[in-house]
Length: 220
Image (cartoon, rainbow, N blue to C red; front, side, top):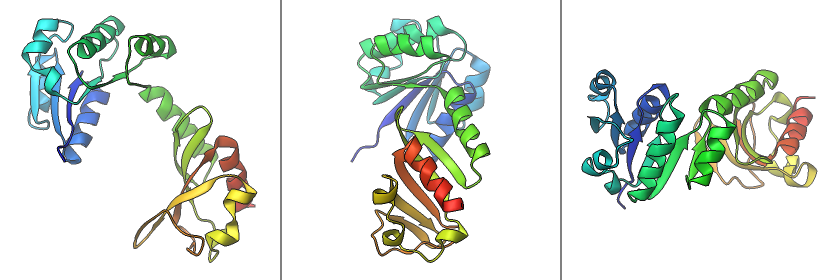
């Protein structure tokens, strides 16, 4: 199957970090920024780089953005440029457009113009770090929606040697363990007979409240 190709508009901290990771994952990435110095710095990292003004429709058309599967608008502080670039990417036929929002108002505007996904890097990172700071067994925290979360929790000594059947998470708390990361590999969709060992990492899905209740019970 052909892999998606990405165009990232704006090669600041977020855009360049995203581009590096996509390259590491084996994808082709076109990076676009109006700053020639930034473009030059990223030219050896990304598949292609172009210095261009992405608020100009003809410029975007000439660099062939319509041929890319996913467009990411990662423009920094210029909200007007972010919105205009997003509209142009949609109009030019980019299949999926993702845009970085600086705040909730910017995000609402992006949603109204048809963005497929709005990303709030600073806000989301702040939420994740806050949860990690107050929960010593929480390694990572990703909010799927306003109610549902995926969390990575370390198996405590209290759970060591117990099977998932012993824990009975779904009946007791309503959440589910969807994977277990062990030293010798990851178990995806573990069964009731899988045994937990101290320092294993559980990937748990549920509401925020369910996961909090499970974590409290696991550490008491």
